[in-house]
Length: 178
Image 1 (cartoon, rainbow, N blue to C red):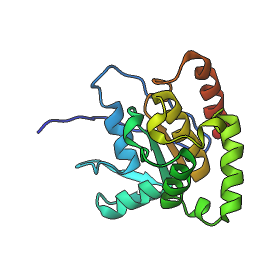
Image 2 (cartoon, helix red, strand yellow):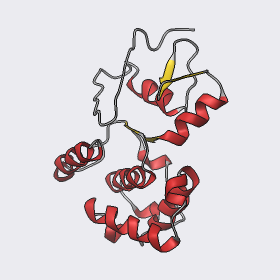
Image 3 (spheres, helix red, strand yellow):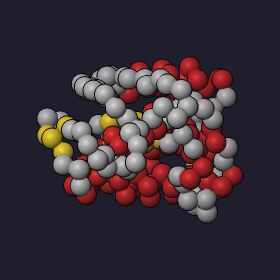
Image 4 (cartoon, rainbow, N blue to C red):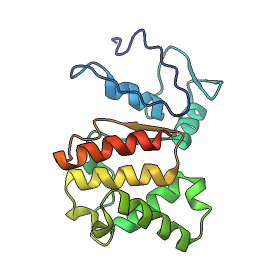
């Protein structure tokens, strides 16, 4: 056994944008996966909204219901056979009570509004299998916005995007935090 993360002390308040920078293999993705509840840490303390979370299934459930992780490799996230809009409705509804509480018409309107911001409206009727990595990443960002997560974790959010979208995503990240 070996130590992956050591000496991490992060305190975030609402509206904070934090970039974690480090070399390959330094634990950035592991940290994000812990904060999302994908990995339960063996030591240390994690508090969320003033509550110290025990390292068990309750920890996992609390973190997953309050956060969205946009992974480094977006290809594993959508259901390839479904259209993009079906993926958004299905996957966002499965993880968000806020989104789920809206009528189908309200959900569709919300999706179209976010799709306009991210220039993905023309992708909504395509099958997920037809999308590029950058297009999938923009879909995942849209889903995070629709879920209204308290914590949005992005692992290299511009890695698959062409340079035209780097500044758009940067501005969007800043706007989300307000």
